[in-house]
Amino acid sequence: MPPAEVETAAVVVIGGGFAGLNTALQLAASPNPSPVVLLEPQERFLFLPLLYELLSGEMRRWEIAPRYEQLLAGSGVVWLQERAIQINTQSKTVETSSGRQLPYRALVVATGGRAETYGIPGVQEHAHSFRSLADVERLQALVSRLQQQQRPLQRLVVVGAGASGIELSCKLADLLKGAAIVEVIEQGADLLPGSKAFNRDQARQALLKRDIRLRTNTSVTAVEANGLSLRRGGADSSQLESLNCDGVIWTGGLSGKVPPLNPPLPLDSRGRLICNSCLQVLGVEDLFALGDAAACPFRDAEQASHPATAQVAYQQAACVSSNLKHQAHGEPLQAFSWNDLGEMLGLGIGQATITGMGLTLAGAPAFQLRRLAYMARMPGLPQQLRVAGGWLANWL
Ligand SMILES: Cc1cc2nc3c(=O)[nH]c(=O)nc-3n(C[C@H](O)[C@H](O)[C@H](O)COP(=O)(O)OP(=O)(O)OC[C@H]3O[C@@H](n4cnc5c(N)ncnc54)[C@H](O)[C@@H]3O)c2cc1C
Image (cartoon, rainbow, N blue to C red; front, side):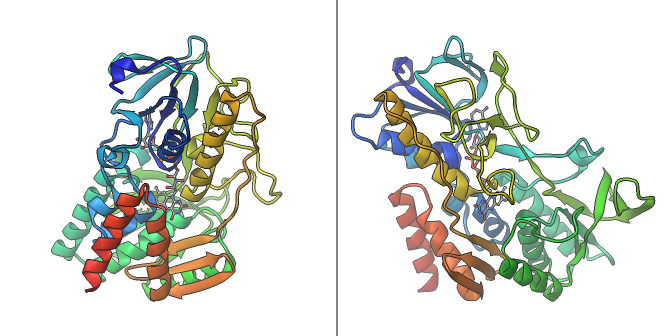
């Protein structure tokens, strides 16, 4: 269906990441589907959990970043390569970057998240982020500059000892092969606070093996062009320190990236749309939100909300697509229930750790299993087969 013929009966999905792409594909694959329009400005889907392997050269760009044109061919989903600029829930339209007013019957917001900088001076200007193909290219250039210049005491600092910070620091240390020191700064008391104990132990060993220094209970107060300012201890501590470095990579937090709404809707403290358990945005029946852009009630007493992971986004896509069908038929909606399948972390080149589905595994076998598990999560069978073919060709 050409974009000009998009009807008011369409379900519009904003954002083609794990959450939005899978919602759109599942809706379009159902019997007698409504027209489905996907608004996504990027040319390529990005399989973020494998971004570290792109950085290290263990995977290629086409494997982790297939083109939407290829992924959506024959799916029935209409892809508009445009950004949503504003959502008007009264006129039920989305204004896009080309000035189009796109009408919808139901709207799905799956716009993901952005790095949270907490207003710390210099983060925006001087720190690298790690979420895009351009970020990978910038970091690869930095690594090769450090390898070439071989000055004494070169240093890279990774801020945040969550999964992203730990995975990234291990890959960087392996790539740098001693050309620079890698340090991880964490304001909390330990690394990987939300992780399983086995994975945390494996991560500690991986840092030790690579001489990566982890500074806990340490907050970044400013980032400058050639270093950063730190405070050791709590907010009122006077233990201040400056650290020179050749680059800072920021993995310190995430907030929702929701397009402006008219009339405005309340967001939670992390900038996410607040949903009920069926992933409907509170107070707006035909508006659904999921993935990193959404806060949905979570019944686990230990955690305030679902983790911001591809696993959660993927499972929520199935819930939203089936709730959109229920809603169209006047049937009751279903509550989202997260099935925790466990956690897989890459810990350097060719190494990983896995805890989940009754299994704990580390080292090279875990790395291979992680790749296989992610291959099964690639969107669409043709992409799964292409990636599997590429890996087989490498082994032969
Ligand atoms: C480096 C890295 C590694 C990770 N590793 C893991 C892992 O190992 N396991 C795991 O489970 N999770 C991992 N995650 C987290 C996981 O990738 C996210 O939780 C997941 O991608 C969330 O899916 P999403 O669809 O909500 O958002 P995203 O995947 O971020 O997709 C959002 C999409 O919306 C589009 N968009 C944004 N704004 C607009 C707009 N205004 N109009 C139209 N489109 C818009 C963006 O271009 C993007 O394509 C990782 C994340 C990162 C950054």
